[in-house]
Image 1 (cartoon, rainbow, N blue to C red):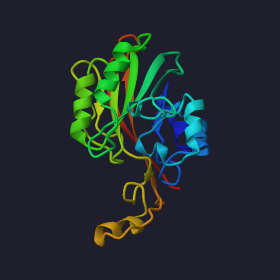
Image 2 (tube, rainbow, N blue to C red):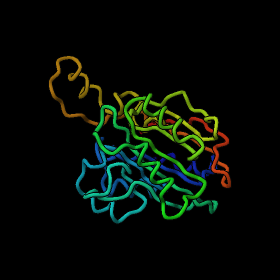
Image 3 (cartoon, one colour):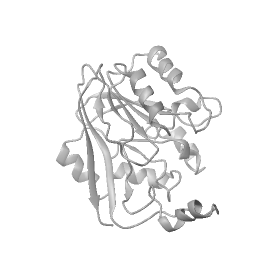
Image 4 (cartoon, rainbow, N blue to C red):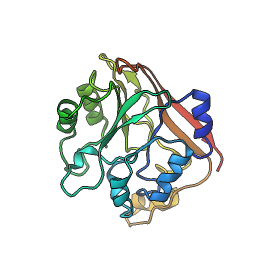
Length: 246
């Protein structure tokens, strides 16, 4: 990200960048230092998911820093941080970024569909037209359902969590951009980012191992969206991939 994002922002004239950072600290969790490294590289907002809780030091930072989000549907009672925010893009456009998490094969937290209903319908002030959602979720059917459910009410639903980019980017009938998974930024010759030597034993003999982040040629994957600032509709969506030797 440090080597590629500054050039990408200039080359693609990107007005706003979000990045899911929940695995940035050695493959699990997020720290204050690693979050700051993303901001220094040109990321505007860091979203997350179930691994945001892996490093305890991030808890107070979630309260302090409005540019780091945790999934909205963990609720409010005793849970640090926030699940959405309103920000300003480089071109002056005001936009909302929302972070939600699925429940299938994941923690049985609050229903993300109902949580988004409440946010969109009961916010003290209407959200700006441009609304980007990171849906951190295990299975594509739940992601698909979430996109369809929110079609026309948000600008984009971009899935995260599985680390593998999907080829189903599209604009839904009412103008919401959708992709099941934006993919991963990490080593290409790995198992979802980890050194294969530390992962394969779990599949071969079931013994526990300690995962270690892989190395070598690294890929940055993501989704580029063009959104009409007045209507909030996505007008173009495409996958973005770059590689770098590290």
